[in-house]
Length: 349
Ligand code: CP3
Image (cartoon, rainbow, N blue to C red; front, side, top):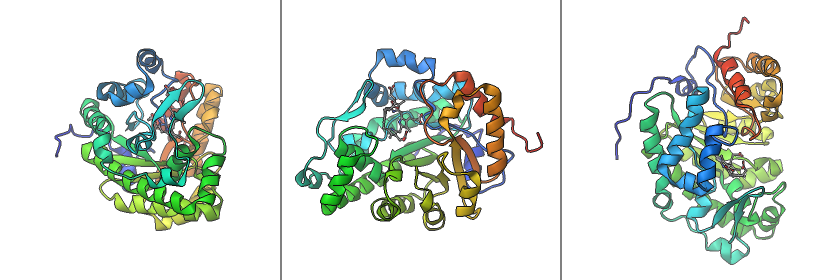
């Protein structure tokens, strides 16, 4: 299927990801569509989370809300990383004050070997429809980012059955039943590749891979349980740039930079810009890494610290973003200050 999408007017993110010289860094925020926006809260009252995700018109509207409100340089499709577990037969519910909960998580070796990545794009066709619709409705204002969760992070939820600080059940399962865990990871890798390719076909111009929980693994376990699958996914996607966010896995930056096919690496706020540049030897586009909690600071301080972040990363090979998702209790004007400061940045100020 080929689409006839409106021409892209703001290609700053794409040029940065292609390694081109740019006039200033592009800016967007992880989880920029969400509960800090009053527009989002209005729709949240009327529909459940998965109704919002599964109805292309709603997902499209929610994706564009932060674009209208804050004018960042990219949109990210409103969806969730837990769509893949759903497509693989795990029921996911979003429970108030708890987060995602699965009624039938992987509890046994048999459950694990019963996981097969079949027809994932077909089962998640609503996501592709939302992407195609959003691409049209954005009318070329900014590029549209698609995304997926990385296999390790999805495995965490699929075994733990809900969010957790340490995903101890998931880790125990992996150490006790490595063959079964490996089977799940391989199926997740296949599902993720098929899913991302379908998103690209539907109109995603960049994709981001979220390994939100990779920081729970020791460096040795990261090499075994995360790295090979991240590499395989990045290698398989050559149609559009891939942003890889392996949160907490600072020790892997050098290898991810030189050995993976990712176009950019996301950094969380526990890493200094200098460390990020040194580890990747200036080779890689870096994205991040403003501590999301710092958006609680007075606006003058947000402005000062955002400027300082850009001074330290430099204006080239850099995508300004938070170091993780925006928090629900952030004032819209504080988020705006972050975005505006990047857009107004000039090194001489
Ligand atoms: O960035 C965006 O604006 C796009 C939308 C997006 C959502 N989830 C919407 C969402 C993205 C990129 C995600 C990814 C996601 N989902 C991740 C990886 C990124 C990260 O933050 O580490 C993870 C781990 C999930 C799983 C998930 N979904 C959790 C843990 C929760 C509950 C916690 C929370 O933030 O409420 C969700 C629900 C969720 N996904 C919400 C949104 C806007 C909140 C839903 C609501 O209460 O209205």
